Image (tube, rainbow, N blue to C red; front, side, top):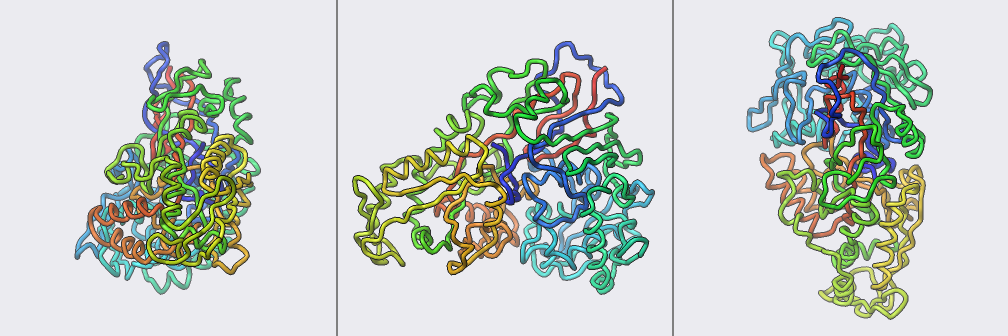
Length: 618
């Protein structure tokens, strides 16, 4: 029961979230002193089986397994993005950002970014527009290698950029007006200023990717990217390569174990931000399994760890915390929701079930067979919440519409049966339903479905290794069998599921898969404005289901170009009403246990991982 980033994102692998912490413990030890101590080592358990394996903050989607631990628990500690997002969960944290909030003019076609003066890299270089130009030059020339790229978005919508070094401003001139909220939250937060020390095309070969002239950047940046990517591929040198020691974040890397299963970071003494780190070391341990992690926690070897939900006491759905503490020597944190939604993917282009999936009534029937409340109570043991659409339902927010909250397709095998029989299907006492009214008018089976054609047996591949996933798909299988739909669950390794993610056409052998369940929610932390573009836009990187709808595409354009949330609300209501994917309950974040001597943190739904705020008590 662990979140993923939009599918892969995590979608690339069924996965989990590592720690995202920043505020104050909820159950402090009564005997703990209140004075802050300087120093001390924090050892935290990261998500099991999700090694930290990429250091360069410009990576391709192949490194986005799990919840992108490379980004939140590694890169962001050393290399700060231009804008820092945290809160509960939609607030820009301007004091911790490298720039002031952007200014939009010219009908939202011109965006002015005012850098803060005096922020430095650890080698003494002051961050200037040239460091932003470095990133922009690279993303313009190598956008296909950047994990967050979506066709039509940044940098496709960038007409030109001007830099004023005297005023420390960067001005983006866009090809069309944008929705300022979307552009700040989902585009500008991706920009990471790069130090001049990285502007190399080879060992000691100075280049000019940070040029403020577009033609120079276009000529130089590809070689710089190739060199930096090659250096990032040499994980054995991460702690010794001088490139990666030039940081502007609160920490720098001092030790890196083979395979990225353990990393040690220490404070950057030149950090320009506030607060300065008080701990002396941060050790991130990646266990091989939940059992291994839990053993470390029970032995007292961790400062911060987590209790596997399978080992936690069953929790009432409405409760905010577990009813008892499984590891009494630690402080038990309240369970926190993640800024996530969850679904099962089905393949619209599969030649066998594709014609059925294109019928609204069939998708409505399938959604009516998902008993989300029962799944939360049984499979998730109370550690989760229901989800009826593509907006994160928790924590409460302004984006989830009243229609999404209304549960338009509540669990009802009776309704599922009506959706089928009312549209041309006969459901026998046993075996699959079959079409008795072929045709394309209302009440018929629909296009591409012939008389007496049976609903084909559906293979549902799901992530192996988690009992909760097994129970969820088993519940769906049982309910579907009662209305003439035969579903065969198949436990499948994450890597195999990931291999089926690229888009396909009905005639390709790659389109043989029918349904898959990653099981872990799609975390939207790196896109606080929940536009769902990466999942439902035609040709998008994470459009696993091969979803294609011109109306939805037109709404996406409005979402990113028209101020306000009206287009987003219309989009979300449509995707919910049309059961575009099979919405599933969202599991909670980890159940954390924390040493009673460590203070200064709490979980954040957007994974604002900030160990510079942590401290031990005297």
